[in-house]
Length: 165
Image 1 (cartoon, rainbow, N blue to C red):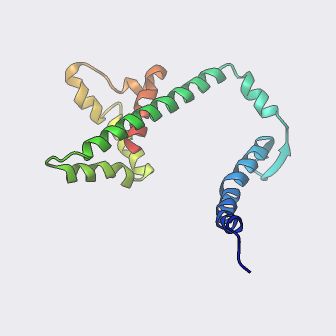
Image 2 (tube, rainbow, N blue to C red):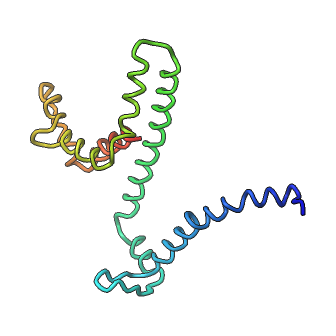
Image 3 (cartoon, rainbow, N blue to C red):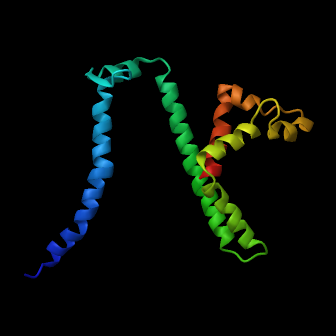
């Protein structure tokens, strides 16, 4: 028996559908179902509470502020990642001395683990002996304030995310 083109195309799509169901659709559905339940961590029991958790979240006076910060973080990281990525691609497309070294340096953030990145930046931003304190001290600036003041705390987080991406 010979397969028609549409049957053959369907057979080629089946693995993708199975993969999408197993690794995308099911986890999203399960997460949504879990969000309507309360989990007792001691006994690992689920108690259905319905939309109670959503109503509590929307009633929180800081919710809109948290949502704004999340959107701001996402927008800034996406825009700067695209601009920096495009800039690096254009730069690496040119011929110049040290191009291969720059390519290797570009791969370093990808090769470093998330834990190592967190430890490195913990020491860079440390309020007492951080690297930024030594760099900015002659200028009379205190970069450790960036992590203490909520208005400035998003900047170092965006910078670390940009370096990692």
